[in-house]
Image (cartoon, rainbow, N blue to C red):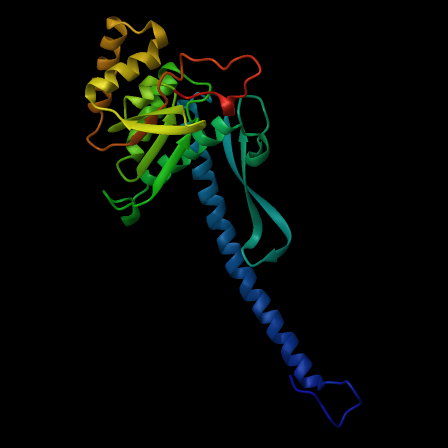
Length: 268
């Protein structure tokens, strides 16, 4: 479009305006064609992902919960299509899904991320080939509010992820720590008037003692050490591929003093 110096001040040639208007309309039609194709692909993928993560949640002590990928229509299309993507979650049966960022607790977020990551690594593709991933995944408090079979399921999924990523997991539960190929004890100490954190890699015998403490705290005995050895045997038999985990020594045994916050609680 060019300015017409011979016409009235501030005017443009009508032919150029018509050409520009037509070009805009053509571009908009092309955009809508592509955006609608994207919307169809998103709807298909959203359905599959919602079902997969919902199924994963049932294994992770979130029975009855559901995960939903919502496609929220936009009043006008944007650079990323005709809708906004929103993850929604219902932690229990009978509860309508709400935005994940607003309703999920820290433990729930960790477990949903675990379900998402596990689903992603199970999909075929070169990025999921053996040893193809170089990322590090960190899970903190992924064991919040779970135990028993749920803890075993979490440990198994972490172990599976460890086949493709380096996985660091801070856990209070012996069944999860036992799945690790490497376990460390994390302890807070006071040295020179300052609180420092000490991370100690554990050998096999040390792992038995540590898992025994995680199982029974100060009441650890030969019976709990036998249970710890059994856990280690079961964990190592699942897969030769590993996950690096970090256990908080004795975290199950110690309780915070009255008025002491969790953030200040010693993790010895």
